[in-house]
Length: 241
Image 1: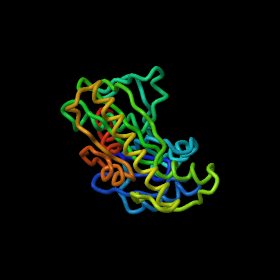
Image 2 (image 1 turned 90 degrees about the horizontal axis):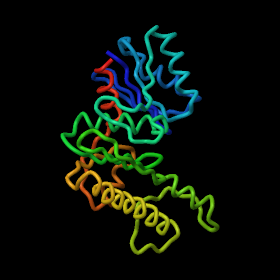
Image 3 (image 1 turned 30 degrees about the horizontal axis):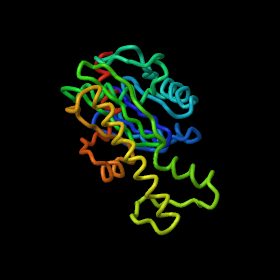
Image 4 (image 1 turned 120 degrees about the vertical axis):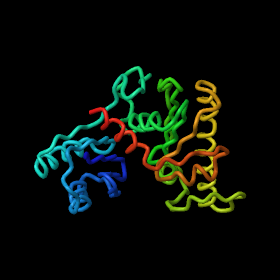
């Protein structure tokens, strides 16, 4: 049984059989965190992972698994075609590995076309046609990035954590929160409409990522929550190896 790991910008998710967990993905403590998380698990038969964090994390995990378990480690990277999904990027390798795995995961659970929204550090909206063609996708800055961009680059706007929008907004915090949340949710809605014209209005809408709740609350669309869609994609890939 393979250990599956989705290494994101801020957090890493893992699954081994019925066991799963999440831990911060910063490189300085990545291996220490992985060691703690897997300390009481039976040795896996192999490791399959995607990585969008620091490049060195991939090399660290390969060295760790070779030393601890002496097992093969496979890093999933985008290709022209895999598991029934065809990559439409001009350069297939430019597509994020997590997005590629999520598309494969969506393909494995959807009977037709799908639009996948991933709300994390960045917000991505990807369109998958019914025949498995990845039509294309768009990237927006996520909620934290958008908020931080304003307080770092706009005079008079301080740093704060508030993200619950208030209409009417009567303070700077409320104004930034409402602007950020409604602009991202509205942007997602607009992209869903645009991609829906390409793959059909009946496409299933899947959503994953840590800020799922903000999208689902303020979007005008109904989504199917898929919190571990990248892991589902890794499971699908693992079945072919």
